[in-house]
Image (tube, rainbow over all chains, first blue to last red):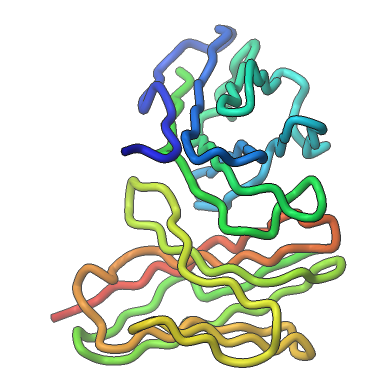
Length: 117
Length: 109
């Protein structure tokens, strides 16, 4: 049984397009995350979200927006795609901790490799 | 600023022991994680240290010194399947994970 799943696994698109990546977790976790891993393998957090609060990394352009239809899903919408958006995007989830960001183990999805042409 | 340093690449021999070091500078500290990431796959959790000392888990152990801002991951009895990148990540005072770039470990027969 897949714990954290993402679709699509690969996404190739033209500059300027709008695209979405879906993420679902069946672990019953309260907190979900989106990360961007660039070609240098740095993992950069983009958003963390639970049913109470969205925390945005201020360096993330507002072309990126998370949408959570329910606790088990956190989708990532990207408008006006740019070449620099090419990367692997990981979704993750974790149980809720004392604060809105958990110190517990994060479980990662398989990643979505986005290529912008 | 916040920073995580770890070696870019290490090479070791099957059956041997390897230690991957990580130093961190963060605004506050709420623990340190080690993750393993095979090429083309998602990171998977290995360990979490928040207190000083050594935590052993099978062939893998993780050590933390908060006063020195230092951690290491020790891998014993290396197997070919241990070839992967090992990511060090520190949790800052806002409970944000600050990630290192990872250490690519190459295991040779």
